[in-house]
Image 1: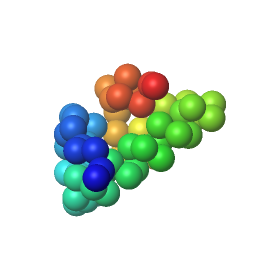
Image 2: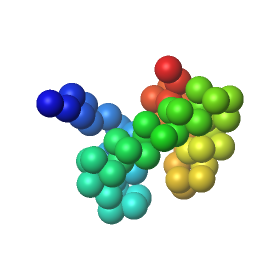
Image 3: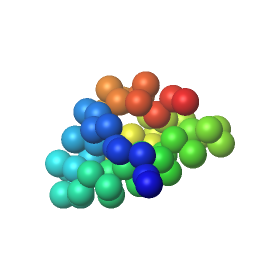
Image 4: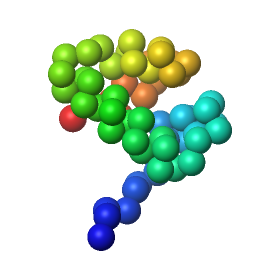
Length: 61
């Protein structure tokens, strides 16, 4: 049984910008978190998605 997704403001922003489902937004957020853990700049990742750095802390483990 999978863990329920807790919808954050970052989820909502991704869903609105990209017309994604909650599951699609969650998949992208997990990918972005992994990239941050590997050393990428969270602000750059947010910029790639067309988002402001307001969601910076949502990507920090």
